[in-house]
Amino acid sequence: MSESGTGEAARPWLREIGSIVLGVLIALAIGEVADGLRHRVNARATLAVIRTDLGRNGVSLEERMMKGRCYLRRLDELRAELAAARRTGRLRPIGAIGRPNIRPFYQPGWNTLLGSGELNYLPRRQIDGITSYFSMVETYDEMQREEQSAWARLRVLENRTGPVEGDLMAELETTIEETRNRSEILNVTARQMWIFQHYLGVATDRSFFDNGTTAAMARASVVCQPLQVAAS
Image 1 (cartoon, rainbow, N blue to C red):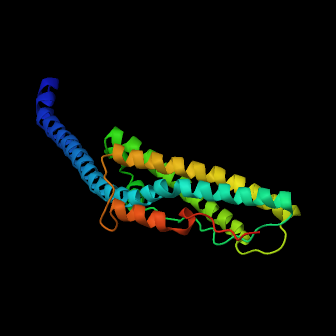
Image 2 (image 1 turned 180 degrees about the vertical axis):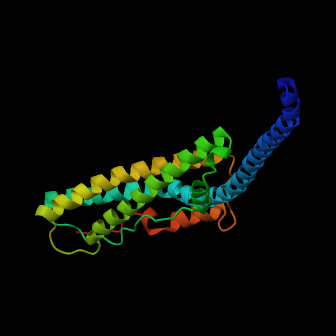
């Protein structure tokens, strides 16, 4: 058989192979497009959950923004009482000092998004905003726990009788300074997180407490009342 005859015979076979390969490539392309579309749909559904979480977290952030100055004022009051005790050698009896609230932050939507690997299917602006927000949540949660421990140590001053001196005095003074610094950072962080929440277009969820109720509860809390100190 001539070479031309062999080539003619092979052409149908080659065309069939080409058709199969082309079909496979088209199927892969369609599958990739469909897969990408599915990931984008999932990511946007999870984003809706995240937005709900942010709205709920907004209540805790606004509470912190309202009460943050109370925490700093209380620490300044305790600092003044210890300074007076250093001068007089006697600590005046101090009533309840109160404490900051610790509020867990909703983040199931964020955890789902990270676990699915679908974060990059969101628009870049949303990725940057959400990532920044939840990185601050991690820091904020850790500092809240540290803050609670510090205020627990300060409650040794409540209704205490007798002198406060030596190592105990030094420890309490140091705790007040460290706690005040931590409170300032938490106050600023809460404000930044609240700004990010609104940057992402999420309003605070008022389903449980409206702004007026939250403010009234803050004003009524022990830590926002003047420190009760017995006359020396």
